[in-house]
Image 1: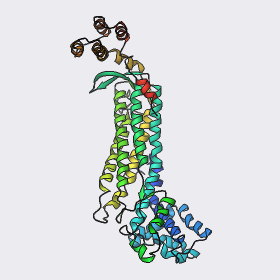
Image 2: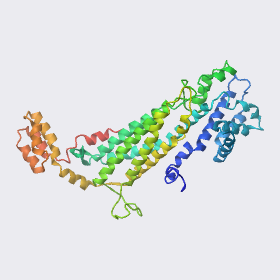
Image 3: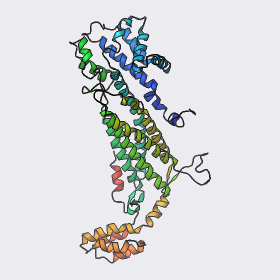
Image 4: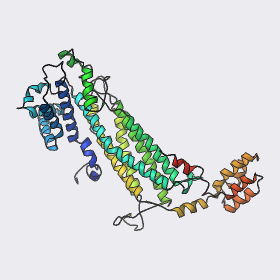
Length: 451
């Protein structure tokens, strides 16, 4: 770990252990094994392929056990074969042939990888890896959303001075602002889940050419679909060249990047609220905030998350812009790029765990929030001029602008101005009773509408 080049495998290795079963070389090899085995089983079950006889129950079980019993030690055997073949997928084929040598299955050896191009195996393996990666990442996303929802409800009535363009603005509540992020992230999570993960199993240029030359009577698209959808849980794409075009991957990576971008926005806002002392941070015994200033408790979790989201998005951006492009029917520029899918997922997971840690350390400083509001009576210029419009008073905006813009305004100034206005008694009384802390509109009710 200490000699790892990538911080994902080094410094942050303990934070991404869930992803090692999804994106490691071992994971890729295991999924290749799975695809090859499922294809062989399907060929044996096809009546139109007489030479690839039906399997007994025990034979099928033996083949499936090759997948379930596949370990890193077995993966090393494939890597040794690859060192000779210099072809990673062919090494998998040879490994499988070795596994059935000496058994009743040996006579079926030449139907391993039958009519397949390497990309038939690889595209399905990468799709399965993405499925596994999402299964590991989505719970982290949902946990962030759930924490934000809980905090939104807890703080839905806690008034906060808003700032637009960095200037004092109409008050809101802490809970409402957190609810906005929860809703945004929830929508993007749904978009990620909606992306169909596609796969192809149709030969060298996507036309089942070799398949048809050997067995013209077989319904090859239907057979491939049974493997892709029935066994692997993916969605068949018949409109491909030698490669599945990766458009769905671009959709997914773009959706993940949008999720991360919203999280960056949250991290920056929380960081700013901490700097304004709206939030404090619970101290952790033994932790040091600054090497020279003993009093500091730095918002490092949100900073760490922001940085790692940026790295993840840089990877996702390249993946989504590069992968849908392939010269003519195939080039290999996608191969090395696809091996870095887990890097984007890894940086994302590090970011999510950092945000969760930071959110767990927050403690609200209601006194500072109240003092900030009490020093911003000028924000009541908005409701006053709005009621003045209702009353038909001439140039209400301009009058409030003259009263408040660039001026130090306090409660007495506001109330004196309201008293001078010719307003309906109920409207005037409502304005006189209003404070910056009570001028929060429907913020609490909006929080209650969060799904």
